[in-house]
Image 1 (spheres, rainbow, N blue to C red):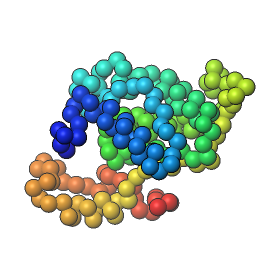
Image 2 (image 1 turned 135 degrees about the vertical axis):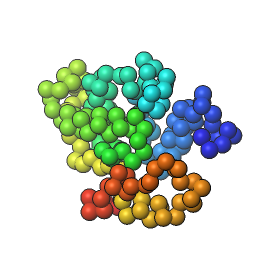
Image 3 (image 1 turned 90 degrees about the horizontal axis):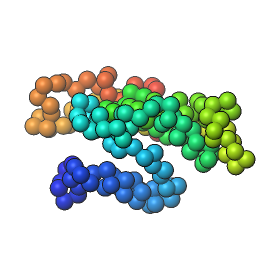
Image 4 (image 1 turned 180 degrees about the vertical axis):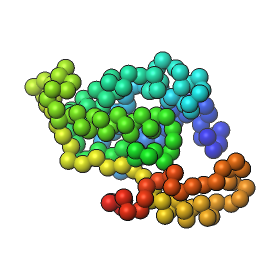
Length: 171
């Protein structure tokens, strides 16, 4: 949280949700569907063990919710966090994994049978894209980060962040 005027710990989730809704509105994108889980926080925190956090949810339940949305909305393309998860947040890691599994399951008529109705049918989107940062950009950014903002205890290793440039297929 960069400024207490923007948000504080107790309302950060609501602020982020409103930011997302406004960004979708501005871009003319379908309004987001929330899965109903609270922020899992960082590993080892009390938020991470909250029974209503994504971290504590059944993976099969979460994947099922995403499969239902895919079948209901019937998108051609899905965009998710990259599998290397540049941001490192437990929820981002989970959503990346669950979205990939839902992408693969959504077209299978034998998976999540309870979703299938006369209006909701299996559907396989054409593509799954991952948001990532090319390692060359991470490298360039690492060179310009002021020394007082660098972590004291660790070097920035571009191989651990982002994706190799040759893996980037769409810009």
